[in-house]
Image 1 (tube, rainbow, N blue to C red):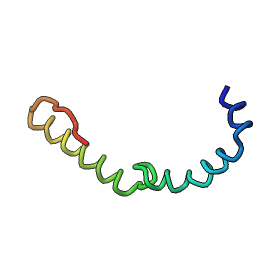
Image 2: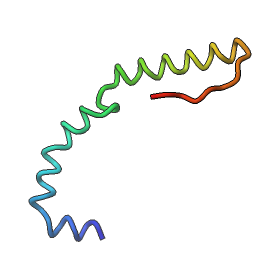
Image 3: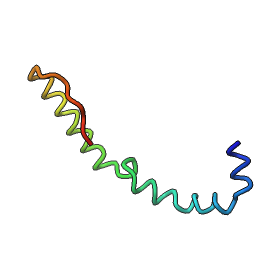
Length: 61
C-alpha cells in the first residue's frame, strides 16, 4: 500500500513535497495562459474545418 510506503520513506516524501510546486509550474496546467491559447487555437481550427465541410483530422502537439 502506498500509504505504508511513504510512512516508511518520510525523507523521500519531503523531497517530493519541496519539488511539487516547481514541477507543477513547469507543466501545461501550471501555465494557464499558453495552455488556454493553444486550446483556443485548436478549437478555432476545428470549428473552421467543420464550417468548411472538411473531415476531422488528427490533432498534433
